[in-house]
Length: 84
Image (cartoon, rainbow, N blue to C red; front, side):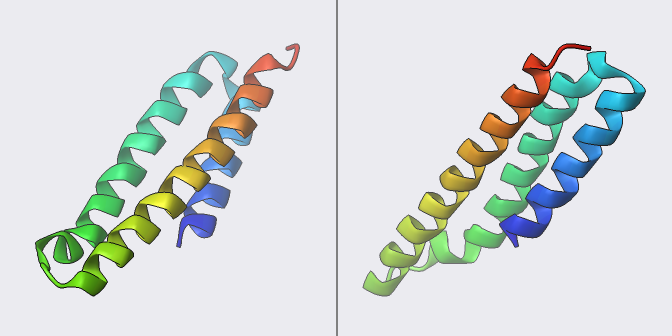
């Protein structure tokens, strides 16, 4: 799921960088906010579950989210550091 969202967001950022470079940062922040909201909606049933297995799922979900967040941030920083 995160892979598909990351590819779509980064493709949109690349298109936007060619079209209007000044909106890349704002678009990135909006995309991350949207991704976080979607992730929360998916995680909500797990958050309400009090079982021991749910705690492992919570940690796994958060770790994967932050790994993709770091990956997206690095790619966007490289995009923003390019000379235009």
